[in-house]
Picture 1 (cartoon, rainbow, N blue to C red):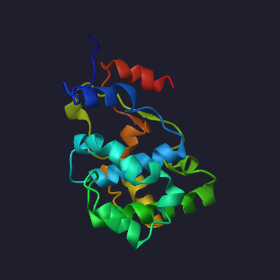
Picture 2: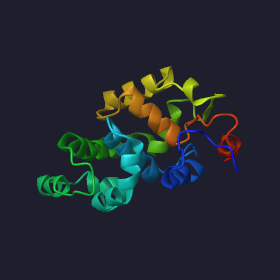
Picture 3: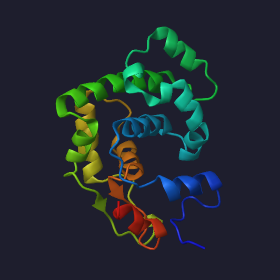
Picture 4: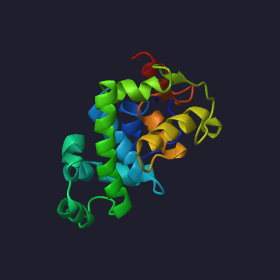
Length: 189
């Protein structure tokens, strides 16, 4: 049996997410946007709640097409508020719409959002060497910096803890524990 980080437990959905997605460096703007939006919706909730509703989020939010989301009007927001398949929080839904607009503005400024967000951490993955889950912090100086810059540009629901979770998920930081079989794999990409 493969040794992995302890947080997925025995949950097959969590295990699949851990084994295939978490910590893999993302450079596709649409995927980065998806993770940013989902992390924002996750604030105050468990990631498992978000994973269970992920397909519903994809359908409800036009497969995270930020160009479409930036155009959502009040009618579409009400439709989302009535969608039991997603997290129905008006502040988070409105934040997704405004974040899409800011995302597009950043793309225009930097060419890609990928270039912008990775540039904030020096353009390469931060590799940690944690031996246990309890060593992994909920936020870092880097996530404080990224969070502050995102907020300055107008992003919402991007506190340092949310941003650090995004950095972990998007492979900006390798927080697999060193004995996890994925630790080396995500560095080799």
